[in-house]
Image 1 (cartoon, helix red, strand yellow):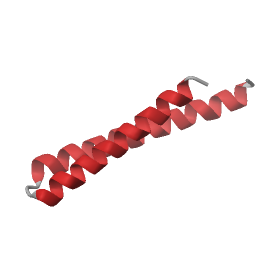
Image 2 (tube, rainbow, N blue to C red):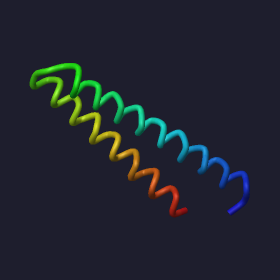
Image 3 (spheres, rainbow, N blue to C red):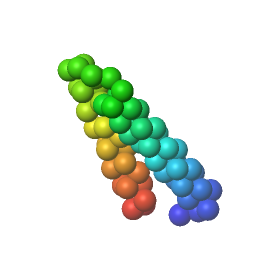
Length: 63
């Protein structure tokens, strides 16, 4: 794999990890600052999305 492609993949991994981190932070904020069924479902959905982004990041690391 050439260096340019490796750099692009590394950049994608970095961006994906940042997105996952932000989704996780928002999820925790919703869970702690808001009460009710809607906030719990929203927080759970955001956490699920964050986990999916982390799985994608892990798969990209295998390339």
